[in-house]
Image (tube, rainbow, N blue to C red; front, side):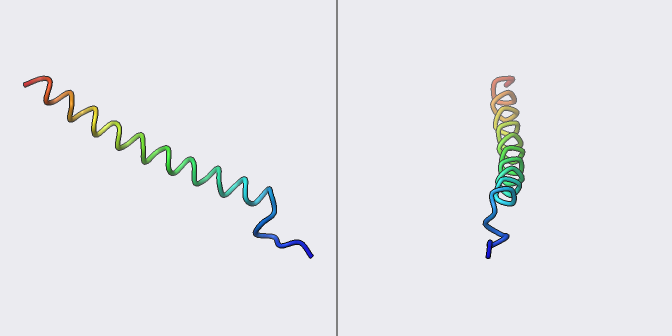
Length: 43
């Protein structure tokens, strides 16, 4: 009997979603940092 949760397709989808969520979070953080650096540079 195959365990559905550990099937490669399922794992691939989960990891893709996780990577996407993680990436968008990192982009937001980077944007925040860049804006902060830019504001500091403006002064």
